[in-house]
Image 1 (spheres, helix red, strand yellow):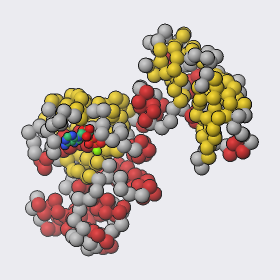
Image 2: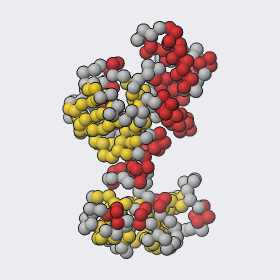
Image 3: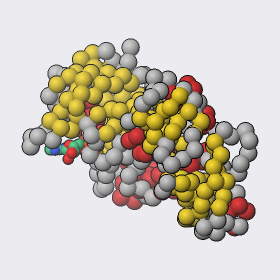
Image 4: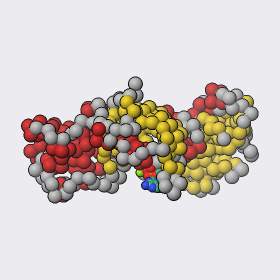
Length: 356
Ligand SMILES: Nc1ncnc2c1ncn2[C@@H]1O[C@H](COP(=O)(O)OP(=O)(O)O)[C@@H](O)[C@H]1O
Ligand SMILES: [Mg+2]
């Protein structure tokens, strides 16, 4: 049984904005599950509906197998961490974290025990942090207190809405790893909202990619990266070269003005004779003509950009088709100039097809 089940949830706001157009999801117990999509695609709306802060127009939400549509937020067994701060700056860390427990009239001793344990979990020693005022903390520490404050009531499900948004990149990356470690340790189901694919990739067991109020693909990060099912997902998750054309045969793809392209037969299942995009990631294209790659072309370098760990080349292989190629060997780059003719190649099995 799924820990959180969303069945065909629709939401139209006043003014007619269709924020959710029939979303269905099943999120397993102990899963780190992310909702990933561009701003405005309905992530926050879905999270607020799960929390009970917003009412859907259609569909159901089940938590632990129970329909919660008539259950108020504080009785749903969910914790909430939002971007921006819900903690009180002039209260101590201890008072902030214990707030929910005091509201629920827990005994003093148990409150102290729980605050100690949850601070320990967040790698914040009780003696060092409990009596600090929250405004004396760094951004990363405040975010940890925020999470501790939600975890201390031991929710079944923790909902997090872009909680690391305001933090600097370095601290954000550190917090991503910590959050993942924490989630595995406490075993609480996490539903994490973000528009940042690297963040979703770094932490999630599974990701739901959303676009315009709909979930368009659900899967493990590797799966979503390797086999995006739509052009939108391919574009949104990293960079992809898309070549428009037609699947001629089970292993042949034809694009205007280019020699025939070899594709993996299994990729073409059900697509023979149809128009499609052939997709190939920039890191799967090589500047060589090695014979173990079925597709070998010659192109012209039209742009080169140094990116630090790699270089991004734009290579025109004909008919205005420009491929993006990532080159990881700096030696290759040094000897390349704009206008140079270069070989490019890729393996048929490294490409995939997207229906148009
Ligand atoms: N309270 C509201 N009233 C009217 N429209 C809203 C409200 N909240 C969100 N929306 C609209 O619903 C859509 C989805 O918003 P939201 O769920 O916040 O997206 P996300 O979190 O993915 O950025 C957007 O078009 C947004 O402008
Ligand atoms: Mg949002």
